[in-house]
Image 1 (tube, one colour):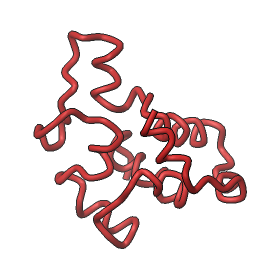
Image 2: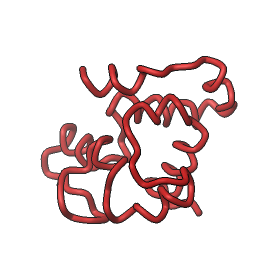
Image 3: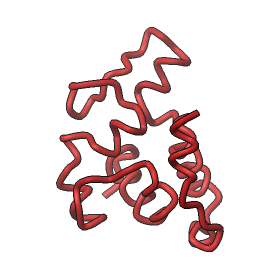
Length: 110
């Protein structure tokens, strides 16, 4: 699975230890695998009556790859990561920032 392969390319258990809450660590792991219930495309795979389209930009299916580059979240990416272009490797290189980004864009937290 390319998403998992690319997501875990830069894995560091030391960085992952920074995610001290089990719920937060589980969310990051789900995003790395592409099997996250907060992504529309994954929900569509489970229930095909749900739309796979990103509700933020409505341009394409909301997969983890799309979530990392969605035009509707560009300003949030820049404010959290300092740049707009995020790759799958970011999921393991910066787990705390990924968690902050997920909470802001997928979970609706500030």
